[in-house]
Amino acid sequence: MTYADYEYFLEENLTKYAGKWVAIVDEHVVASGKDATLVVKEAKAKYPTKRPFLAKVRNKLSIL
Amino acid sequence: MGLTYKFKKEQLQDGTFVSRPRIPVILHGENVSVEVVALIDSGCDITVIPEDLAKAVGLNLKGSESTIYAFRESSKAINSKASLTFMGKEKRHNIKVQAPVLIIKSEEGFSDDAGIVLGVEGIFDKFNINFKKTKNQILLSPV
Image 1: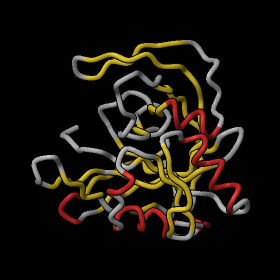
Image 2: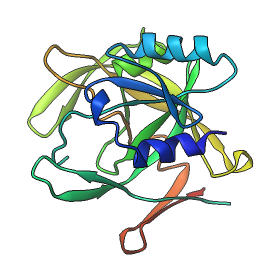
Image 3: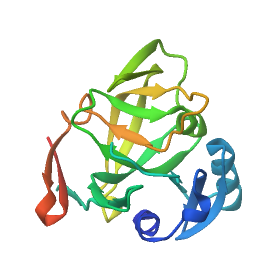
Image 4: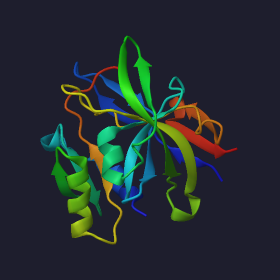
C-alpha cells in the first residue's frame, strides 16, 4: 500500500518533470519520461515487487 | 466503510488556486497495475482514460470507436472496460470496481495532462459521492 506516494505527489515540487510522466515508489521519483509505457517498465524493472504511482506532471494549468 | 479524500489544491497559470476532487486509484491492466490520480467529474457520462496510460498498463484497445465531446471540441475514443481500485488509507479499506471506459486517443499537439476522469456510468452507481468543500472532504460510500 503506497498511499504515501500519492501524498508525496501532492506535496512535492515536481516542476522539473513538467510535461513528463513520473513513476513514484516509496516517496521517490524512480523513472520519468515522455512515454508512459517506458516509464512504467523502468520502474517495474527497478522495483519488480512494488506497484508504482504514475502521474503526468502538468506544464500549465487552466480552468477545467 | 466509506472512503474519505481531500481536494487537491492546484495553481493556475494566472497564479490563483483551485481545489479539485482528485483522488488516488489503482488502474489494473493486463500487463501491470499502477496507482494514478483521478478526477471525479459528475458532468462526465463515462470514465475517460488517456491512451498513453491505457497502453502503459495494457488495457484492451480493440473496442469500437466513439467520439467524445467536451465543450466545443471532440476527440476520438475507444470503448473498453477497466478495473479500478479506490484506495483507502489502509489496504483493507480498498474497494475494487469494474467500469466501462473510453480510452481517449492521443492527438498531435494535445497533452493528456488531465489524467483519468471518473465519470458517472459505472462509478456513481457504485458509490454515493459527497463533496464537502468547506470541510475539504470528498466522501465515497459504497452503494
